Image 1 (tube, rainbow, N blue to C red):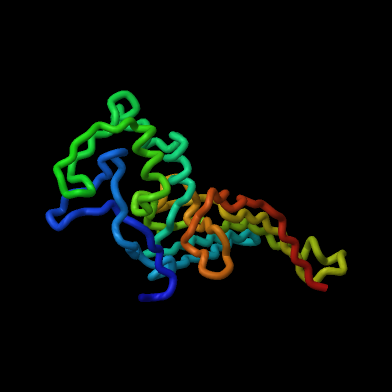
Image 2 (cartoon, rainbow, N blue to C red):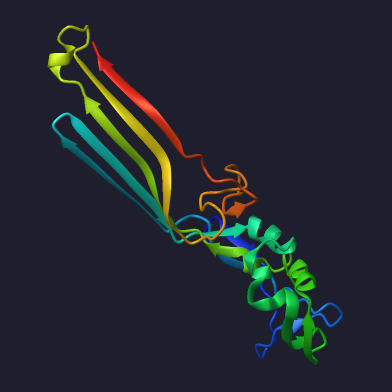
Length: 214
């Protein structure tokens, strides 16, 4: 397979496509180890525009990555502790979750499992529920600058000078993920790409850039 594949477990199905549950807990059983996709984006893009008018300039950078997968541990933990929105959707906390398929012995199986029991059972066993598309588009940077005219610099030791206000990581324009930053990673080292673990989003920053030439 290509380098950098996210692998894990889906709910097990029998030859007829029925989901297989353990009859003592009602939890779905794991499939064989399965690859869900690459952590390396299939394509990347970047668009930059630099506009100027008289002594003012405006620079905008938009970039993105597409076609990668990520295992989102934040969603798994949120599901286990009842903090993910799916654990309260469609009245499951009041009515439970109906499961319908076969048990581990191949016998027909139906049951209604409480939301807490079900979601705590699948949170760290069914990887497929927490693997998502990690494609994104970001407004990466905007800079607004002013170049001082020579009439201002004539009595200074500077040949040229410019001042810019720069903002970085300003806005997430599109994301295939719901709850975490698509660039989150457990680690940037080794083979940890594509594995998020309660990461925090990158810091939005603002700064001032002063350039002078003597």
